[in-house]
Length: 120
Image (cartoon, rainbow, N blue to C red):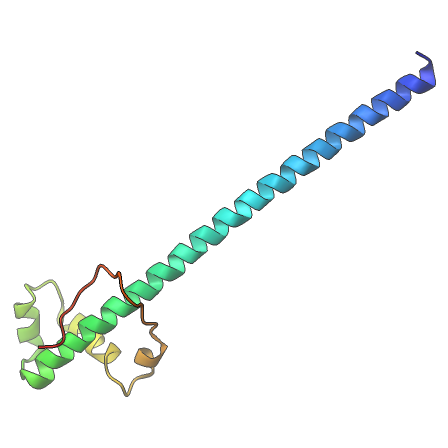
């Protein structure tokens, strides 16, 4: 093999190796991109589910305070002191049709793990 053909073969081998590496990097980037989309989608779904659960809890809190005439402290007692007075007020605001928070909170249909019966 002559000097020139050895150089051509070496150049071809180097270019082939670089092309292979570029393909592998592109494939890896596609996998990473898809996984990043999965992460962000799951986080957005979680955020929507939390907003829906909090909105429904707020509806129940409002029924307790408005229909059953419980004071905020009594709501805390009836809920096993899992909530604070501040949290009760925050949840009630989420369910208030006059606040912008309610209009902004997304609603998730079906399949939610958080169930709050607000039908009475």
